[in-house]
Image (cartoon, rainbow, N blue to C red; front, side, top):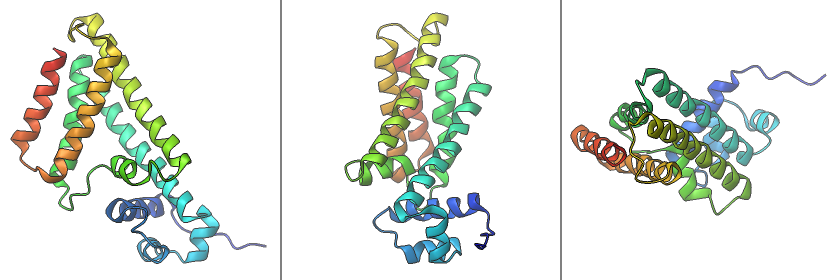
Length: 193
């Protein structure tokens, strides 16, 4: 009878994600993963199959974590424009506390892996489309309520907001001045008002 592996899979995914986030996919060796997770190679391979599969599982883990940010923003918001503001402001503490200047895990993945693996490229496209779709729904609702202008179609604004969020998070890798980051949020919101 095969031995049952006894470890917390979520904890292993978190540790592996943090390592991939810090070093990138190609900069992370299997020995690095063994050291970070506390599992031996055979346990990692038996559980995840390969380094690439483990990386994909950490992306799914990250998506689950960041999805909660959108949900919290929606719950706290007075209206759709306020919800968009809360999404940006929800990332502000993470940016300010990112002393290692690691940025966004998904964007780091995009720059390193989008042209390297078709499965990861598909995941990135799906992740992007989900974000754009969420913003489009919020903008359409905001336009109906009159809190977001209708100078452009909701889909155009959705791409603008998604792009602004990515730029905001990239800027935050090197800029830790809260006033500058808050100004970026405020200026993004002004375009929509």
